[in-house]
Length: 149
Image 1 (cartoon, rainbow, N blue to C red):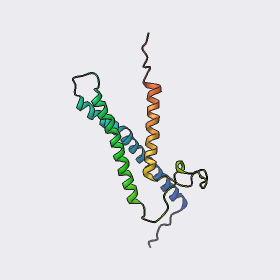
Image 2 (image 1 turned 30 degrees about the vertical axis):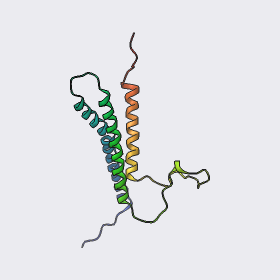
Image 3 (image 1 turned 120 degrees about the horizontal axis):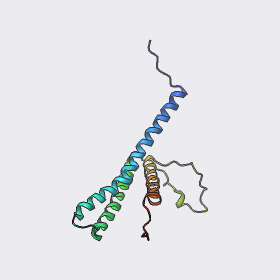
Image 4 (image 1 turned 135 degrees about the horizontal axis):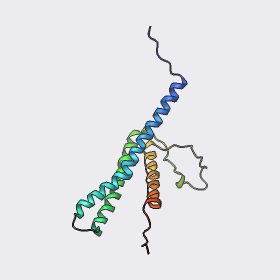
């Protein structure tokens, strides 16, 4: 006789841990794609624009790389906001009050009260990973820019 399987607390804990691991894996892939993929793509595009005739990067190529990175990140944020907006219910609710947009007379901020959306979490995680990677490179691997005597 077939009986429906009743989930016990161990199953839900295992499923939650598996879900956390999956979310962490997705966040790492997104962080690498956004944090490394976009700048490297624009450096590659700049190298194709520059050609192989010169050892230095022209100011026009550097400006195109910089503008391309900024526009790419703006487009990614727009697309992420559009996806996030489509996923939320269309209810009449007051606008979100972010901590940096609060008056001193407003209701007190309680940490942990409001959680970030998955898209916001991905961009925050990306920022933290890229900042940590840059600091590691800058302080450990880059070496001194000063001439040796």
